[in-house]
Image (tube, rainbow, N blue to C red; front, side, top):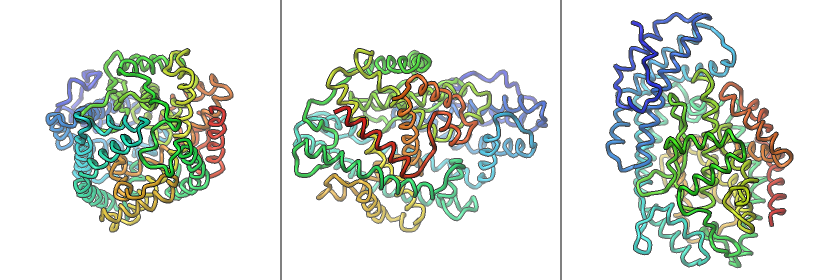
Length: 568
């Protein structure tokens, strides 16, 4: 049976409820073909067309559950897809991967794609398909718990993200009250999250056993296609952070404590301006955030600006925070439509601008990788995908001033720059807490099933990497920090990428301080490569080194501290 691939739509928006029998003829057609050097291009092009649509259907259904976590119909549609389409697609994809690998046919810029395909095919087990479906359902359950959290504050029902604005106020008593109110609400879900955690872990351990692996970390490493580094490299990076970034973070915290004039720095003292200046309010309307960020992107590169403008015109930016919206921010791709989608929870802070620039960097990357002919070439390791996003945050720094179309003027411009640079240093220790905790979890599976032990271990890692803030009397709030880090629950081991990528992005920025135009050009060239090069090669193209050592990190920290000195 021959399927008409030309009849497939250019977007999945109108076929979100397609059942498996409508996809099946296309996969049957591909599986029946003979792959030769002359025909492999057509085979991959057709495979790309059907895979793009399936991928886009999932992403659109997932997006619908995050923009409104209370939308039951959206959850039902995603569940139907996961139950009745996802497993069959995974089996069909496995057949095609095995077929292509057995053909031994090679293509230019496809060697890494074949390596990834080989790893995926080796990991595949039919018995894991229902478990992978259930894992997605657990992830959605976690997001529904977090998305439903609201706090009563001064007669209004606010999300924790909205109430966070109080933490920028000079009145310390109000900051403390808002912080405690938020944490009390989050702790109210402690048992629900603990129960879900135990279910998640048992499922992940079973996934690894079914694949013939002794532990979930090995399973996840292969699932995430990590070919260029090992868990041992992560340990090295944690040690480098402890040596190079933790002392610098302590200096930042101490400087803040002195400027605030407090005896000890408390968790509710970390967002307020240390000189007690009024909170920065760079925008009050979402349109201002969108339009101002668009101007900045155009100044960095007209090509980047056009990407963001396209997304704005086509309704691909969901930026404002609201009740029943999933937490955090992300950029996902609609592969068939060749478009990214950005999700955010903006409430009017300077950080919201950096977040949109960050997700915008992912979006620009998606526009560039969409130009590669085969979907198998577009998968970029998160370790470099985050260079695209973090690099954009830093490349945008020269254009943040109002006189250049940005958001800030005078003292506010220096102030927001200082905040951004300090956050670079402060992030590495927090990342080390998250990453080291996750390694402990999957090295100690029996102990990790006990939430109380997880609390204790998280606290130990927190004390190791996060000195400088006084959590006395707040032990329960501190030890349950792992509850509030979404990645630990819904994307295990996805966090070290941010630390590695930030190190790469700072190197890109160091180049920009010498020659902005050339740095942007090299950054742009690296985005075009998609997944056709190794992580070290992608970093090198962008003008950086893929590194874990204390010396490289120390140079980055030194540069940031030098720039902080020039900002004050």
